[in-house]
Amino acid sequence: MVDFLELREQFPILGQEIHGHPLVYFDSAATAQKPQRVIDAESKFYETINAGVHRGAHELAARSTVAFEEARAKVAKLVGANAEEGQEEIVVTAGATAGLNLLATAFGNASLGRGGDAAKRFALKPGDEIVVSKAEHHSVLLPFQELAYRTGATLKWFDLTDDGRIRSDTADEVITNRTKIVAITHISNVTGAITDIAPIVKRAHEVGAIFILDACQSVPHLKLDFHKMDVDFAAWSAHKMYGPTGVGFLYGKRELLEALPPASFGGSMVELAWMDKPAQYMEPPARFEAGTQPVAQVVAAGVAADWMREIGMENVEAHEKAITAELLKLNDVPGFRVLGPVENKDRIGTVSFDVEGVHPHDVGQFFDAQGIAVRVGHHCAQPVHRHFGLFASSRASTGVYNTVEEAKQVVETAGKVRPFFEV
Image 1 (spheres, rainbow, N blue to C red):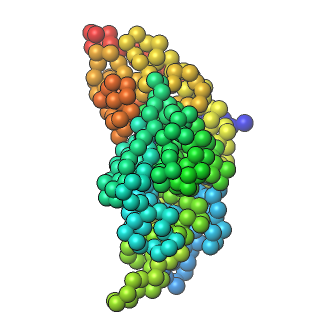
Image 2: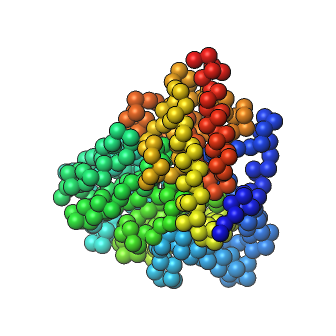
Image 3: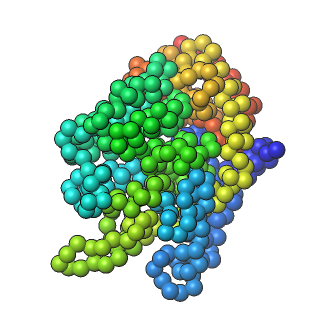
């Protein structure tokens, strides 16, 4: 049995006051706070074994390399990926955005003939289709929209239900024999809705398409096994899974990573380089990790992955479900409208809401004055806001450190917003 109140004490940032009130942090969908263990891990790396990895023959370089690769394996275990040497399926990136752009760029390079025969499966041409959805974060939408422009492919998308869920039931219609890539969010960062990806993955593979999952909002909240889910690629960021900023991960099936051409070029990713002929690149994951890696951050992210596994993602789901039930009562506050499913089913505790007559920025400032941190704006997902007839919203999103009592405080504070602004 996990004592989440005791677990909360591991987060030093939560002990402070904001505007004279104890901090209540409900912005984990943007970035999660860090337990002391993760903070210490990054600091200890710099204090004890800081060195470049896969480069030097001296002792610090060896220790740093071991710590870096052990962290990669810990992250792989969290999401059900291969971690064995020579079969690694986790690529270190600068974040989910970087991982998704890596894929779009690599597919574009394949479309130019780079990567040889093995990479032809990733190549696009006019008449091919790329499928996304209206629920996508801009980090999914824009790289693949640009890839369509560069290659002449057609961009298509899944529509949404009234409450903002991706219409998985239309997979057979949206995904056709011309579809080459399907890139879909697992959980919307606006509605909190969990996408039923099984029929989409099944249909994508029936037509030979590559399926890419945006797992930014699911890795911190759900127990995942990418092998069982049969996704081809998945991207997420460490800072949303209680790890450091500036680092993320890209999962790829090993056989696909071996066929995919590189997207960035420089040190550490090349085996042999000549002046008069193309270089011979390293095997994955090194092929996709050009330059100096964020080693300290990766090591700390590995600690975060172990920490999450120790808690148990099933326990995280159960804990956050109770908090979500309370947050959904925002829909009952006069003048408030929750964007997304209002039933506490197949969703997480990311609850965006519109307040009639009050701008989201004013809503956010009112909450902040009470010591409550929520997000305001379009959350880098403008099409889904347009689906609800809006340009922006306010958003409360849960982490393991939140409590039902804090969620009740959010709902109670919400009831004071419109009277304060005399709406």
